[in-house]
Amino acid sequence: MKVLVLYVNSFAYEAKIKNLEDAPPPGEASEIKDAIVAFIQIEETDEEKDVLSREKKLVNHLKWTARKNETQRVVLHSFAHLSESKASSTFTKDIFDAAQKRLENAGYEVSQTPFGYFLDLKIDAPGSSLARIWASL
Image (cartoon, rainbow, N blue to C red; front, side, top):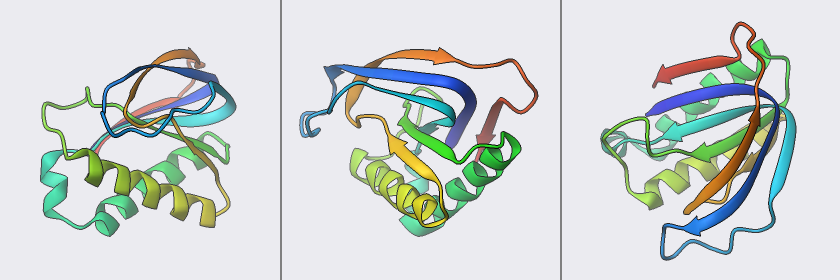
């Protein structure tokens, strides 16, 4: 799993092109302020482990990053451009849903960008220390 986390003053998105045939309707465009946005690529080798173990590793990293940036808001964004290896869309979505539930149970405000769509993005990210963190989990 590869993860690029950005702390953002604001992050806005709008679904533009459906790229997974069975993707549900994308919902409305949205904007989130004062949050960390996690660009996440679940890799094929992650499927050798169970969802719980991969989700737990991801959540621990996101909680640490959120604490360092003093925010309780997290956005999960599937970004299949951090590695050449890709897990199945079903496995990836299962990890996202499990991570969202665990983070919400810990008091975080969590959202996911529309899964299965290319999005128009607007990102306002400060250039401070720990505002951009890349990890291979």
